[in-house]
Amino acid sequence: MRAIRAAHAFDGIRFLSGDATVLLDGDRIVGLETGRVDVPDRVEVTEYDGTVLPGLIDGHTHLVADATLGGLERAGAMPGETIDLVIEDSLRAHARAGVTTVRDLGDRDFRTLAFRERDGLPRVVASGPPLTTPGGHCHFLGGAVEGDLRAAVAQHAERGVDVIKVMASGGFATPGTDQMGAQFTVAELAELADEAHAAGLPLVAHAHSLIGMQNALAAGVDGIEHFSGLTPEGPRIDDDLLDEVARRGVYVDLTMGNDRAFHALMPAPPPQFAELMARLGIPSFDAFYLSRIGVFRRLREHGVAVITGVDSGMGPAKRHGNAWRTVGELVQGGYTVAEALAAATSVAAEACGLGGETGRLAQRYAADVLIVDGDLSLDVSLLSSPREVLVRGTRVDLA
Ligand SMILES: [Zn+2]
Figure (cartoon, rainbow, N blue to C red):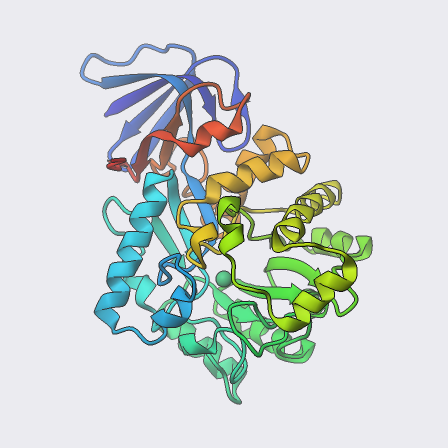
């Protein structure tokens, strides 16, 4: 047994008043007590001036992608052993940044599944190759489905995935796909949802387009990624749609968390999107990105459950370990610090099917612990430099 004493604590839902003691035994949390409770003599106590909280969750990563431009597509053609080296590097980068769980929403050849519970590395919730249309978004990962949609889900389930990912619109990483249109009909997506749910798995849809979001919602998906609302007339997300998303309890992940210093290096957007932005008077990708913080405000007003996913690995702006940046963006979008941190911990854990296991500092939860200097309730940017990270009780080398 050992104990962590910190001046401040966030338990995954709220800040505790005053200091706190977290008792740990191996890979488990034994308890969280407020105040300077006495611990038995044999218990080693580490004291911190800062804030203790659950490790963060990145709800949308691509561990096979090395955060260089085109990395995900290159992974589609790499030998398996090379992919494994990239996966391990990606996980180490997440861990150093205080991320103790990731949900991988698109790998190659199911290779992330072997990394689900490696000692000292973040826990991985994995989808395997995302389901897509022939030639559709991310087809190079090997998940294109021709014909039998139910069989495709069943094959993934047999491989032991934790979640099914489907591409309900085109994407920016795959030239020639339609970011403003739909991949799969409502009926097809409903078939996937049905089969996934029968196998006890959630279905999460990638959707940049409004039509893709509407289709996914109507089909009964459990989560929508990106949620960009793109139409040929510009971005549009109606209040009715937000109310319906909230009513159905669908988790939304805007995949923000970019390091904006790298936006200048972004590749030119596809011509149709560049034309649209020019027509709408949106001067740059960075300006479009910033406008998305306003979407957080609306999601909160409508009571939608939002989680922190980055789409990490997709380029220099989306390096592995950026989840903390989204906490700051949520606060910019009107969330309280506690709400923003909950989106990155307890709420994200529920979305990943890990409620009861991680995302909270509470008895019987995994010892996934992050410690930062200072009072996090006053300054979320303190998350940028972790003081200590434990992954299921194992200390992460932060050097
Ligand atoms: Zn993605």
